[in-house]
Image (tube, rainbow, N blue to C red; front, top):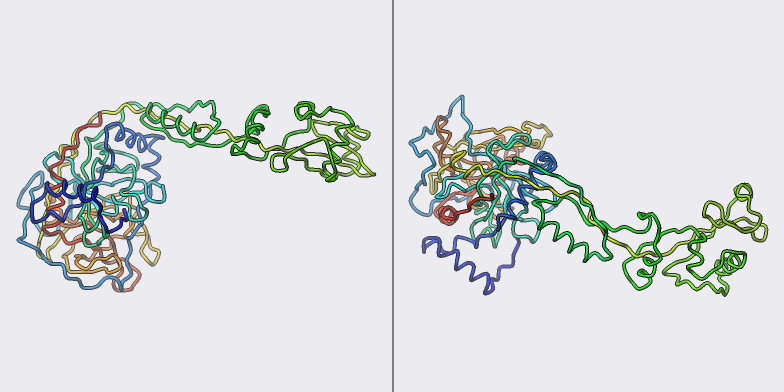
Amino acid sequence: MKRTLALGGVAAGLLSVAAIAVPAQAASDVAPPVNLAKTNFAAKQVAAFWYGQSRANLINATPYAVETTLPAKHVSTGGASADSKAGVVGSSGDQKASSGTSKNVNLPKTTGKVFFIGADHKPHWCSATAVQSQYKNLVATAGHCVYDTESNKATLDKWVFVPGYYEGKTPWGIYVGKTAYTHYDYDVYEDGDRDYAFVTVYNGVQVTDLAVDKVRDRGYDTRAEAEKARAALVKQHTGWVGEIVAYGPNDLEKPDLDDWDLARRGQESQKVNVPVTKTWLPRLGLPVDASTWKEITHLIAGEDSTIKLNPDKGGFVDTMISKDEFDKTGILNFGFKDEILYYKDDGKWHKVAFWLNFAKKYKLVGKTVDLSLKDVGTLGSNVGGQGLAYNQKVGTGVFVFGYPSGSHPDGNYAFSGKTLKWSYGKTFKAAAPSMKAEELVGIKSSFTGEGAIGSSWLYRYSSTKRLGYLNGVTIAVSDTDGNKRIDTSVSPYFDGETLAVYKTAAKNWSGKIV
């Protein structure tokens, strides 16, 4: 997602399109939207990736540990402030909710995990929540759980939201991300004060049938041909798990002289040992008799020989052996035993290995995955959606819901990341210069950072209706008193500019995958 600050004509054009969707005073607040899965077929392939192999990628995903724990000295009093009048956008069950704490807090159905492929090419997850919108298709989380801040790619790959996720179970289905929206300052400058994202998702899907088949591949002379075959395979199936591998004659029943010829013409090749047998010597124009032995000894000694081999393409490796090993072959002076050439010369005993550079070939190795998917409806119709609160007074009480995991600095693992947890506190002003963040809000919370990133901060949360108003998302945690225990979570302050990003995302339709 790291981009240069100069915007050319194309980028400026995209920005002007996005600007139409927000109030005029907020035109510069919203970055151009970014596609996560542009087509239905692309979305099916994303679902296949997470559902395939008995949901192994879901189960084996680890919490996203990028930009999570801040040193105490990097968290200080900040200057978060409202930019206009406070307000709320209604939730799916809008009500006047209680703002007090409760001994028995009913957890929201809206909260879950977002899964994606990180910059390290491995599956990871963050916390996230469903937010009310026109088409009931919106998810909110931390910006760096959507936008790739570690590499030059715009967004993280294969992005999905799973509300109520637990150990591979997807009780309300998987919701594949369609389009991501964030603040212009986060998109361009990675401004921590704007580290939030709203993502539209397709209707949820569940698997009704799964077919996995091993790829049966004939092999290809060049990598380009194999790449073309892979592209065709991807178009034919909803998923493919595998890779292109190079192989040589050692993987074949019989080495082919044609492969050697290709190597001699400059094709990518590899060294392969070949027995000096009746099969190979005639191909080099050599008889299988004592004259061949003489030519080989000349070649090994560096003398003139009728055998003409390019030293980069092939040669002989002569190995000294004991008299006992030689005698066991039953050979007197020169001959073959078990396809190995043995000879005696000047009272010494030898065996000869013969090698050639063979052209590499390529094949597809892996499995295809074909899913039969069932549409389970919109995200909001299944789990509801939290409202949005902005420009709220600092010092207001909020509930935080997420999946904290990982250890405290002292090594204590207080959370597993498997189950949804909550904490409650009153917001205070904060800053984190190392994240380019001067206008954050914080709360006292023992949530550890891995997994808790993206946790929802809910203002006026009703434990009865399990709904409230999203007023922040966790972007980092810190041990502020130096006792090696995490005690603080921080979030961007939600203001009128946050509202502009939300409004842009909330008015966009996603549709169905199937």
